[in-house]
Amino acid sequence: MSQFSDACLDTWMDREALAEAMIPLIGRLYRENSVVTSVYGRPLVNRSVIDILKAHRFARQIDEVELPVSDTFPLVQALTELELGAASIDLARLSLKYKAEGAGVDLMDFLRRELADVAGKHGADDRTSTDVVLYGFGRIGRLLARILIDHAGGGQGLRLRAIVVRKGAENDLVKRASLLRRDSVHGAFDGTITVDEENNTILANGTLIQVIYSNDPSTVDYTAYGINDAVVVDNTGRWRDEEGLSQHLSAKGVSRVLLTAPGKGNLKNIVHGINHESISDDDLIVTAASCTTNAITPVLKVLNDKYGIIHGHVETVHSFTNDQNLIDNFHNGDRRGRSAALNMVITETGAAKAVAKALPELAGKLSGNAIRVPTPDVSMAILNLNFETSTTKEEINTFLRETSLNSDLHKQIDYIDSPEVVSTDFVGSKRAGIVDGLATISNGKNAVLYVWYDNEFGYSCQVIRVLEEMAHVNPPAYPRVEELAASI
Image (cartoon, rainbow, N blue to C red; front, side, top):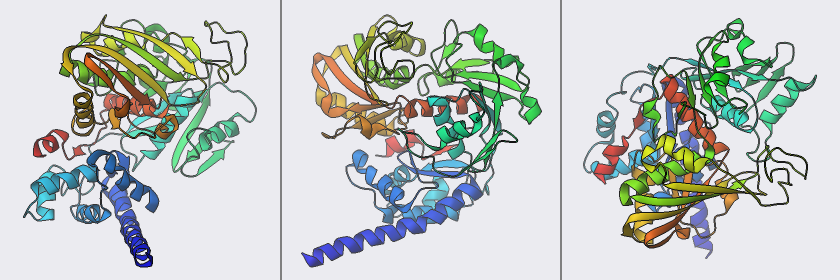
């Protein structure tokens, strides 16, 4: 027993040593070559030894075995020698493809062929920098700020330049910075924050953010702060139609607007992965729909393509939001005046109808309702569907698990089949929705699916993806998903 215990410890220490050796290589790729590395979407840049090992451990949920660090370390070493240009590289997928195709092939030769478009580009980054302004700094605004700061890299791509808020107190700036620094749900900010009250700025991990106080979006002069052709991300929810949101376009230095809520009228409601390709440079105002719409639309899309949806009902079990009262008090909305912390509250949701804006083939086929529950984050959508084609629980789960791994919706759909997971396990998930396979029910042409989603962070990741699409700043991703699917 003692020898076995010693062997386990030795193995762990060897893995720690490899992960530790990877950190400076990953950092160099990021800073010198604008290369972002990940393991099935779990980023490795600026992560600790334990974070890297946990990302490798996560791979077992997809491949059923843990990804050995001894497999990825040679990949990272080789990547540093290729003088790459800007790229996003998933080490788990790259390792899987090398195992499938690389028998008898030298690793460097394989990588030169796989990354031919960026090999030898010496850090070249064709993306142009796009200024971003966050109008509002609530739950979604602060999470967007964290993501933008984390993705700042060498300054190419999206650059968070300013936030605009209404001044709440004399020490407003300090309080705003404190809310960015500490979050009761998502934890502490990963980095350093410095406040300059004289210049109204927040410096977060090298990103200088100008704090602008205004009650009127049309009167802000962003050019006075060196901000030009900016995309304003309105996360206040105050205006949802073209007339209201157009006020931003009247401000100096603004070129486009993105709303973090469902839009009204003819505004495009975009669910990234579904209809983001419909965004054109002529669309000055775009909306990112709702958290629930983003969670369910990708799953509904693939199920409709596979089995044909005749009709469905969506029931959302949604965490409470700032729109509700902590204790009973007056509220304009029905039932929302009752205590969010003490009650389950039946309320309406427009998600079922909103799906049709992104997925017109489901127009008129879905109904929906919602129950607000006393949890601060992570929600669930229960999809009760009637299919054209009979199927089984096993077939549905196998299909969705494969979709989450090898389809072009792998950033939107996740899959899990653990018997022990609960809502807090999905805090911080970057996927729009996570199918709980063990909860799936199927009876011929009827099926019930349960989809978890982090209605704050997962949705914010979808907003960032739409923002990247609007700004045309997505680096090429490797390995190509369609090529990977064909090789295994």
